[in-house]
Image (tube, rainbow, N blue to C red; front, top):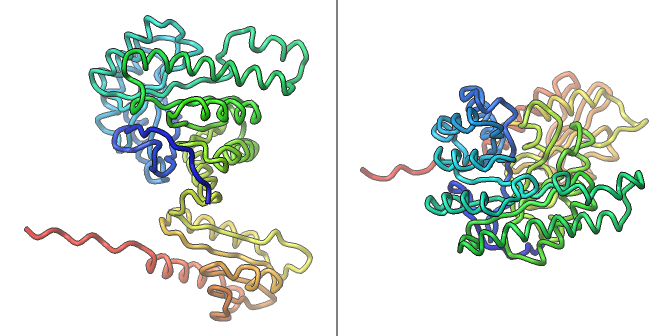
Length: 377
């Protein structure tokens, strides 16, 4: 198991970030924040998908005003995402948000930050100091453009500057006696190695919880891979207390699913089914891929830590999937269902999927937590 870095926990609307708390999954809403109804609908969908903290963008005063209704109706803690205009942060504080994200790259003025921190301190609202490589001063990026490439020295310089900027804003809060317990930090870059370097450096410099993410990671497939690599390196080193996967998708639930899969793969969280499937080869004797897709869709809503295997032949199943709670191997005219590597039953091929899904539901019911016993009245 990974020994996680020690950090000073921060409470964000009842969700603890850092310390010994589980690594939390969060994302941003994709709706127009000014549309309170649509934003709340998406937040409820995100909660069902396993999201634990949500962050709406606050681009203008109308969006800041809308935060009142969003905070009131949200089933999740709400972080206001603030850029450029510190007065929007002041409005978000009045709206009752559970946390503020400030970008030092576009709100660098100390006096403005002090005003926001002073107002937040009165309500005990924590901060995320969110540094993005792309928001750093122009000179940081100049050499990269001139060389038309990013080399190790460029990455090192950018990472150092990201940490410098983050520590500068940490110092502002610390000077106002509002540091430990109220600050978490993110240092994000699109380039994975810059991202890794910056977070390693900051992790060694301060004990604040770290929010991990690879910013602007790309479309769903490429972005999921880039995020899994970038987050996985740091998480495997014990760095990271909350994560957000950033994908070019209109459905933020995809980001949440990828985030949970990353945490599950590294054994940090295990609250949903794991589907394993062989890659297929010339030994395949049935149309396996549609079965995989059907099982994947079926188990998506389950909240139990079971493993399901869909295998293509007797080489991979059941022997190589003996760790699975339940699995199938198809063949010519018939299929085999196995549990924990042992033959359970043989069924006609056309009934294989139906029987498998029913068996999955039965196992899920066995693993489901017992309902809470009501207190005596």
